[in-house]
Length: 472
Image (cartoon, rainbow, N blue to C red; front, side, top):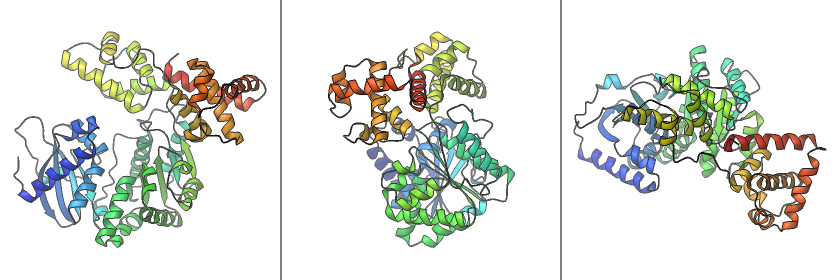
């Protein structure tokens, strides 16, 4: 391996120790980060280049998706000048080959041999149009179902005419691992092909936050604003729920939004919660985000999960029968990432053991999952809270506002029906309500089903989502 000056090696060891200490309970992060090493450090015209090495393409993808922002933040805290990070696949074993720099630095997206990330602020960052898009995330590779068809349609419409429709900003909301990042990248890839002159930036809100804080500390806000307001015409920002942490960053984000809107330039953001539920978010930003179009994504039904699994299996050249696909789709109830993770487990086990993929192998590999997925009171409360756009703590509060009462009574009814808990247990789970309150809630939902068509639709929708989790 290329030898490094001691200060850089010490810096990297310090960063590794810090990240490990902050994530002691995160076993996946510890496992994937451990083989990541610093290969070399070079001086470039627009800042210092840190080249990280990982053993496989799978490691590169995981680190790029889950660790780059944290590594950037730690380097930024220690290294007080503009810098860039790239990731190179070095191969297995001790005989590590470091490719030539020219093969590592690329204008291609994440699917290329290297990934480059700008740390700190560099005025030349957009000169090479490094938009950090994942080339694998396109509209053609996005499986559409009832759970995401509106978000897909809105995203595609915007990609066809960015900044021209009244969909600015587009706010994509949904739980973790449901395809929000896929849609953001699909929009970016489509715009890049259709409107190659437009400058696109896909960035996580965590990175926006870190760069803003770093720029304030270095007195480089002019470069930061140049980067986000002048050298970018389509802004795609992921996980914006983190922006509620810092007032100074919210100030910059607000003015960045205004600058884009005044120029009729497109903004698309994604979050795991609606604007009104982002804690600490300023009202002026919340109203701006609600001003455009909100599109939510929920967990797909089992038929859509099977379609997604078939598509991913074909892309990975995995032969799986319908019985195996149905089993994996049924037990993978939390997210699309879980679905793909279970597919990868089966593939890896099959290759290591030299066994064909059949239902027995799938059950053995995924034995940690219950054959019949279970659902808890918390699960039902979360489903109902999401459906009625209320907070889970409010379901357990004493508030008697009409929307909240309906949501609370619906949740109690579903808990009784699907978990068969006692009235006392149900009341205790909803903030200590007495059994007569629970009884009245059950009676009201039962009676109103035949009289209130909207309530009946709500009940049917929630029943369907519970069915998708339990498979029964």
